[in-house]
Length: 559
Image 1: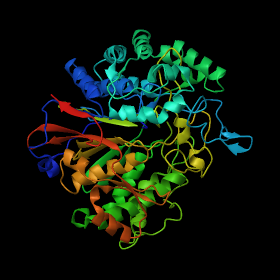
Image 2: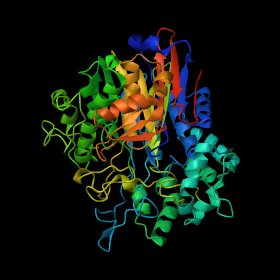
Image 3: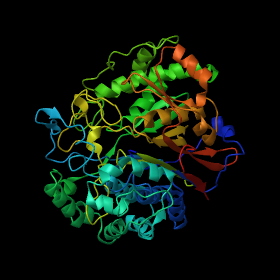
Image 4: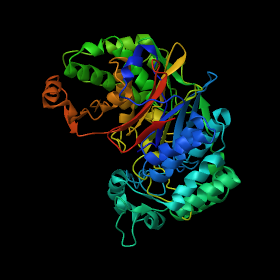
């Protein structure tokens, strides 16, 4: 992941209700889509216990921390975007934070940048925020408690489950690094050092005990008690800087969401330190001036790609933690987006030398203070949840005796301005490391409303492609009238400004790819990428329609 594990809930009203089609299964009371069948089952179980979509999303997320731990878990962070049944909108920032001893040059050793230190080992993790954010979400909008939802996930961790082909592939890719950490190797590798294979049963007794200890003793056990003490002691012994005090100081933050519009629909998305909400809104604002549905495929790919480039150039310069950096609200200003759209040459790919300058950039700023899943219920609760530990198995560090894999989100900072991270993203001063700062994220949990009512909730996993996956799903539904499963099956493409290459799925076919190349784009072909989840409401049938990405194992279901 990367960031996540995610969750998404969605409904689409009259203008797109016909898009769902009778072939897409719908449900009257509740719907959920996640990247793992066991996580979807956990969401259903929470709903049947008397919970709502918020409870179900947390249950699925905690279970993903067991069965999809290469992507997310309680050693990482998350973003919630919630529209509650009473109309209340909540954006909860559970992003990891830099330890108090962090500093902007902490990865410069003997005058040289150690780019691996921000990805692997004791200096890679930020302070986890996942549990704090879940607690806020449940207290504000849930019906069940965190303890209620931790217990079933603990039982699954103790019993074990057979790993799938995705888990096998992710584990094989990091096995060599895992061997350097005995607590990690002891869980994920066999005694001879060989990683587990598809079908092998992964048992995580220490993680089960950790879940149960949190359920029994409350969050303070994790954020100031035994877990924090163990983590701090391991860090001190292994060259890390995170301490028990860092855990105790962590706070989840409620923020004002990004609000934008597109073709008569309203978007509610996560604000900074997520870059996703801003840039989904930016790209849609540029595209609104063009009839996407009526463009030839290659022309449409070209147009959307050019808009992506302009948005990601702005990301590299302007975006960061709003508690530390001045992130301009003008990035989603209609006149500014019209100006950006005017720079697009419909006939040729053009270089984007630098970021734009939005209006009122010095004063009008966002206020201070990677798995995705979607869930919605008939009461009107809609949830988009993105969660992550960053790259596969995060820092590769398991705190001994706890089973908790710690994230490597420090790599999402600009470890040095202009130096690419693991996803080849570059950043500037706005995303430089500072004590207590939250690194920039691409997680893009988004809700779409029509006339004040939720119509679509979407999110994805896959690093910076999260932004473009969410964007493409939204345009597939709102512009093309596709149902959610059909929209997710469409081939994808992604451009992030730097490097100057268009990542594109070969599912478009060679003739279309050749046409796109003729526009002047440098293609990086991919058979598939990303993992997007959503839920829609077919108003005509009165049913919630969930959909999970066909590129990865997953499950959509409901009641």
